[in-house]
Amino acid sequence: MKIAMVSECANPGDHVTGLSTALVRAGHDVTVYTRRRNAGSPEPLSEFAEYLNAQWAVDRPDVAHAHFWTSGLSTQLAARAHGVPTVQTFRSLAVTEHRHDIRGATLDARSKMERLLARQAGWVVATCADELVDLMRLGRPRSQISTVPCGVDVDAFSTEGPVADRGDSRRIVAVGKLVPHNGFSTVIEALPGILGAEYVVVGSHGDEQAGTEEEYRRLRALAADRGVSDRVRFVGPVDHSDMPALLRSADVVTCTPWYDAFGLVSLEAMACGVPVVASAVGGMRDAVVHDVTGRLVTPRRPRECAEAVTAILRDSFLRRSLGLAGRDRACARFTWDRAAADTARVYERLVSAVTGAWQPA
Image (cartoon, rainbow, N blue to C red; front, side, top):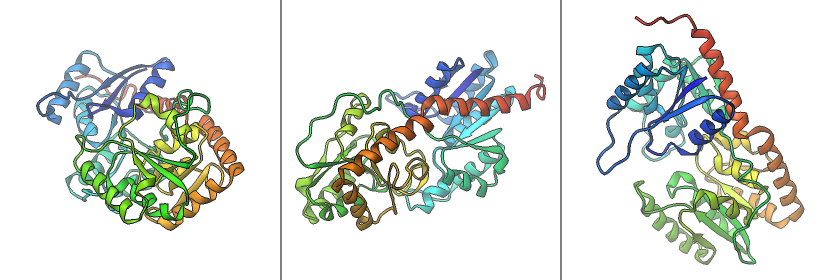
């Protein structure tokens, strides 16, 4: 099958890359379309749609899969002219971000466009059960939505391999951009109740994303106020190839955002055999099985987080059993090959439904 994978981001990200690679491995022909990033501003979405239109006029794909709502706009515009069936993955919805109080999330033009795209796409793929419910609230019929969770490279992220250097203290690791809704402050506030453990935060600050340097200073000040500055380390960005070794060095990985549709870090930790304490929202609620592969906690509840982390740190047998169960679950349910197979079935169903229904003018 000839697949057009459309991601308006200049860097398509792990989800698009992992899914596309697995689809190619399964024998499909995949072309990833992204917008350029250069010294000036990226070309507007209308120009991106025109580019897709020109490409597909020459080499029409069997199906086009758009990731994020802006990609959906360009994809719908280009696909309509050539009768290309479309699949939409939102990755994050404005209504969801607004409900979880994520900074900058408003019910504005974006939410109206997402509602329109959700109704007009040939098929919609949700990444978690929470998102499926929100898509139904936007007016998309349940019978025209599939849930395909994010995948993880279980060969790169595994129990075998190098382990990053660490001291004698118990180690808690968290990964993500330094923005308020990623919930690093929850663990810092919990740290006085987690005796003797260090908290290692992996994430860039002072980069192109507005507010990361401000959040870094806020978290530093919070650690000082709680008297745990000596136990909080910000190590900055880490190459993806070095991430497995860092996760293996953890006694527990915390994923405490207010909301996360993918739950990718929790999956990577599970694949490395490390127990996870995660917010009971979005993709993490689907990935982490409470008291089997880790603990699920209420977002922004430091005391609850402290109790969950402490219980795991105190019991070596529990840590090992949670870690092994997490590895088993990642390999059984969340490989990229599994995600690709589930997604390919969506494509096949959609393409079969429209075959013969469209003829060129």
